[in-house]
Amino acid sequence: MEKIKQKPIEKIKTVIIAVLIVTMLALACLYIGGAQFSGAGAAINAQDMPLGAVPAGEDAPKQTAVYEKNLLSFSFIGIRCGENGGGAYATEQAARDLFEIALEPLHALLSSSSTVEKIDSEQFESAAAGEKYICISLTSALPYQIIYALSGEYSAPFGSDRAISPSTLLISFDEGGNASLYMRTKDACYKSAGNCTFSLSELSAMASDARLYDFELSDGVAYSETVPMARTLTLSRSDTLANGALESILSLLDFGTSGTQPMAMADIYTAVAPHGNLHIGDGKVVYTAASEGGISLSSFLSAAKSDLDISLYDVLLSSVSLVESLSRAVQNPLDIYIDGFYRSDDVYTIVFGASENTVPLSGDAFPYLAKVTAEGGKLKSAEFYMLSADRSNYSVSPFSSAWEYRHASKSAKITTMGLRYHVDKLPANELAAAWYCTGERTVEK
Image 1 (cartoon, rainbow, N blue to C red):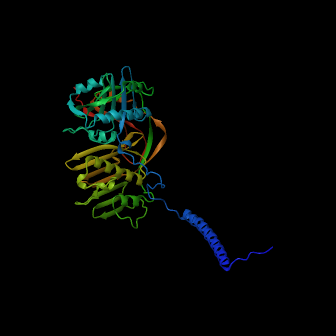
Image 2 (image 1 turned 90 degrees about the horizontal axis):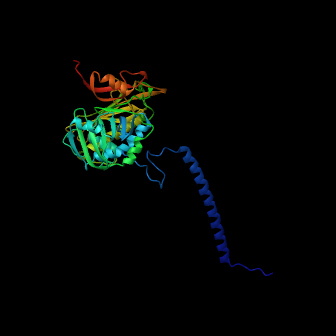
Image 3 (image 1 turned 45 degrees about the vertical axis):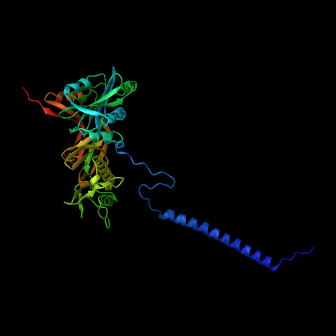
């Protein structure tokens, strides 16, 4: 058979193609092997991703709104609808479920679409004697603007020329389900009315909840014969900062972090910067601004704002952000709530409390969890107590609130009453919750 001879040019083309194929195969092997080696090295040497980082293609996690942080603390909630009704202490799930539902009409009746007027105590008592209402005993008296911000999406609360800080709230419903809000402060009563209607069938269903029990409402104070349960606590001042905590605190408060080391609280740490001083020791974190200094509150907000544009709501948001960050840094074991909000001219003071299963802690040795002051859009001071807590595996019960009310009302006109862990010294072993009342002592005749 006759062979077909290739031309020289064809032979050259064949050789070039063969060389290119071999080269491409070699490069492919090198790439695959190198990728595997590089991947193995990356797995060994991987560093933590920045806080808040998410995989490509996924949405960034949604920031929790301030009203979703459970910062509005209450001690008791009750409901009545005709013949049905009952109440529960905040330590119980039934109370928290009812409180969550009550927040919607409460927020609506504090909004700018509502109007408020001062009323006499007889009008409040008349509403409390009605057949359809939800009553709420707050842990702390708070300005209505703060209650509004902590109960729903912030737009604008109603405007009042009076400083109204209620400790008792009563949402009253008429036969058509139209709601009105009655507020009782230490010295006065107020009524807010607006366009807010609630389903009476839903109200009746909530009032029929078998988890609720009988209660009485007298002079704005709710009490029951049922005995609450609360675990005992063993408390002590926190002695150490976990790894990375000092760096987090220094960064948060705009102090340099170079060369910092984990520290024992026995080794008091002090830092000085043009904007202020930082002192960490004796179980506390204390920041004090320089006379003309301070940290812009905008630093603790999600979006930058001028110090001149900082509103009351911004003050609340920034202080919550600051205290939450400090709480994470020192690994605070307790829950946080707003215990007080005060204003004098342009100076704001925000007090944060700590609680265990909704029962607050306070006393001479632990007056509050944190206190923040702000002025002119700047943080002027911050104080944060560091506490460690061990919880018992069992619960104990104090007397019923009805027994406590009857006993205390013999010598005083009671205005508020609630469970509390009284921390008069540290360390405290097997600390139990007990009833504490506020009011005016009556003169015995």
